[in-house]
Image 1 (cartoon, rainbow, N blue to C red):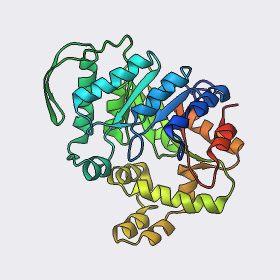
Image 2 (image 1 turned 60 degrees about the horizontal axis):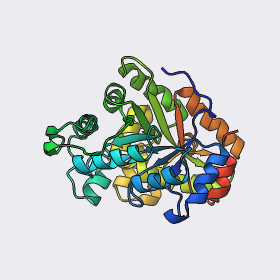
Image 3 (image 1 turned 30 degrees about the horizontal axis):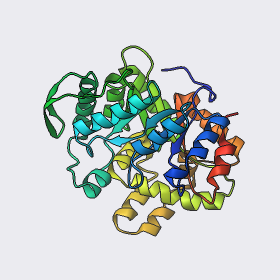
Image 4 (image 1 turned 180 degrees about the vertical axis):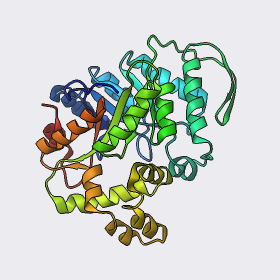
Length: 328
């Protein structure tokens, strides 16, 4: 397992910022640099795509490292995905890490109309395709759901970006270690990292892998607000099948059984009430800023090499939160 990394070494934040137009992000990015943040990590679900905010950051704050956490393996054709990855790698040589994952049946199937089938194979095949395509050689073959015939990437990439794989349970964690340059982990506690990170590192064969953790943070000591909104956020994720299975695998099958049952019966309010306070405390970093930084450090001590904070809008001013959570 990789040695713990001090927070000052790598410290990221999720972008774009809620409610801030992309055109207005320039001064936010510049302040991130001044505050000591090293990374910006984008996501992709139902708002901005993953690449555009990073392209702006590449131009406006070239000091920052850029990462996607994550891009779904299904929602772009292989050739288009290779073009997108290569374009950002060319715009920010040596400063871009590409994160790819299965995403979920909700995003892939319900929102994009694409069958959510054989997720492990889809991710593995797309990683294989990207590595081949980024060499500039012609690529043919079947990759996941796509049949590729003689695709050749014409944009030369001077430095190949690391490819990180979003991973929950053991199979994907091993894939992140064996076929990826590391893993992106999400919606887990600091103690859970001690379960998942060693699986990635053991599968690598040689050399430590990067472990990026998206950590949800609410820098407020308003416990009532955190518990109320935290339950909503947790229920929204943990009732998605891939996350439900993840937390059962982590050992929360009994403590969250009532939440899953009530949600399945359509009793949304009952399901929220069934989430114990301790689950909110485990999965959401909250409290005064110094307490939040100490909690984030626990993730690092457990094996996370790159914290990627995601500020939760729990009656918290984002700009103030960025300043309060900045590395010391």
